[in-house]
Amino acid sequence: MKKSLKWIAAASAALLAAGLLTACGSSEKAAPADKKADKAVTLKVGATPVPHGEILSAVKDDLAKEGVNIEIVEFNDYVQPNLALNDKELDANYFQHKPYLDEFCKDRGVDLVSAAGIHLEPMSIFSAKYTDLKDLPDGAHVAIPNDPTNGGRALLVLQSAGLLKLRDGAPITATPQDIAENPKNLQISELEAPQLPRSLEDTDIAVININFALQANLDPNKALYTESKDSPYVNIVAVRKGDENRPEIQKLVKALESQKVKDFLAEKYKGAIIAAF
Image 1 (cartoon, rainbow, N blue to C red):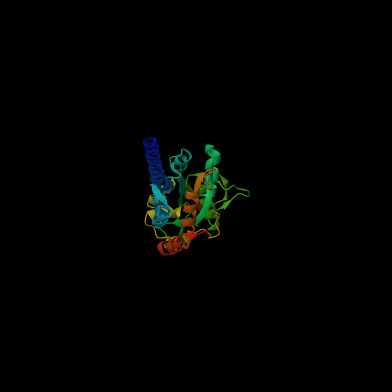
Image 2: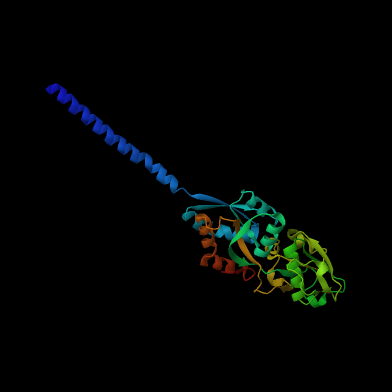
């Protein structure tokens, strides 16, 4: 009987020890799961190289410390970044202003939204032949972007510069057909926005988005005319509708709306690009 009791006690002790070991083992196995929960998230963000890619690079290390790794995917056009975002090949993009995004969504039937406005890139008139718009000859050749919103924006810049007048009620997507007065008989050509800097060799003036001007090493301070700083064309971070409140998207926005980015814009672009926050 005593032997039986001893055996039962020994067995109980063994089972208790095994239970304790199992419990300890469960605790140790839970650690990797906790670490996995803290694992850094990667955001694929589409951007044009200048300035958007440069701005994202400026906050890349800061975001990594916040557990968000940024993979910058560069584009040189205004269509593919939105298509890639809609197709979930990107988590966000940063290259466009809201009027362009709104028009794109309407035309393509996609549901993309602005998560935040970051900076303004004033559109400017450049020339390789003239240093003053007053010297433009009659019939001067003018190049503008061929996409609806930037084309309309360029025409508004030309109107603001006193070179033409659009008809009353012309939409934000105005085209050369909406020109009501053209005293210099300007000959307007519509080209892909990235090609405009190259067109300066063959045109008298071109109205160029500043990101493509900077990419082509054009000096914004040598522009013949620059649109007003109160322009509504603020560049935004775009996401799929419903993703605006994702924690990692919010961290991206917070980093881009930081004093560090404001200082970076001022130092890097010398007033050619202006913080909008």
